[in-house]
Image (tube, rainbow, N blue to C red; front, side):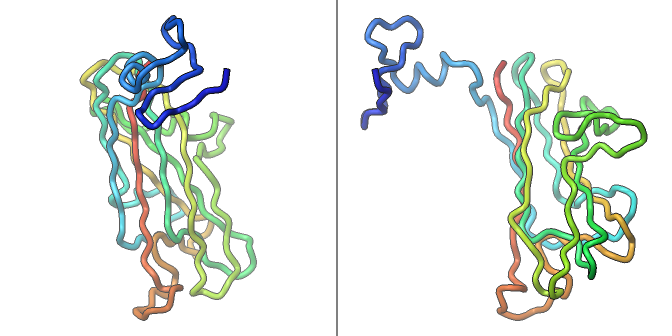
Length: 204
């Protein structure tokens, strides 16, 4: 039987909860299916950021605190970045982005599902940003990442996620929400973009 969402918010053709006719209203779907979103917390960064640090540094304003309301929840993170990248001349140098997590006031760790696995002395990162060999006005944009983390916590523990950046060479800085020339004119190349970090508590 095909699955249909009717105009009155009723799904038909989907057997849920043993209903004989395969129908279920929206409220039943929300409470009776695993993976319900329990809460959403977001932060937005509209100002520019730049770093030439070869050690990871916090991207200012890109940190979110969420306090799970249920046991064994997972935390879904999604980060969208506006203009972002490393300006340089020959594609040799780029940048790295990673997520750090702190639980109940503990130290920050990169040991979470948004970053790669531990492997010797290699950095655990969310993604590697390439260097862009373009006119210095023409920074790229529309970058981002997402993932489902499974932290170990007690109900009531505050969990903080923050995003950090690093550059491969101090001679080639990383820019966010702006390009490297940062001119004040109405060229679209100088437009300001938005970066956001959203976390959601997902019921087990």
